[in-house]
Image (cartoon, rainbow, N blue to C red):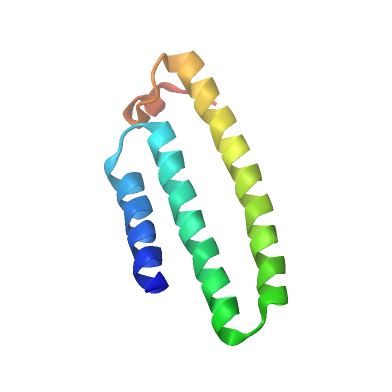
Length: 96
């Protein structure tokens, strides 16, 4: 039962990343993918009978996720200030 919801969440996140041209929607899709992985880890720990190990892994994934979202949000904010929109097709105008 949980496997269906995990796969559904993963597919929604993957679809959101592939289809959208908006940078914030892509970040939200990435969040959905990470949440699906987190739920999969929780279910795996429950089934295997090792909840303590799984809890440590999930906390690590959550910390990495927060750092990733903050950095991606900062990049999206700078792209918005530079281009006045978040369309990924317009990122070719940026110069390093």
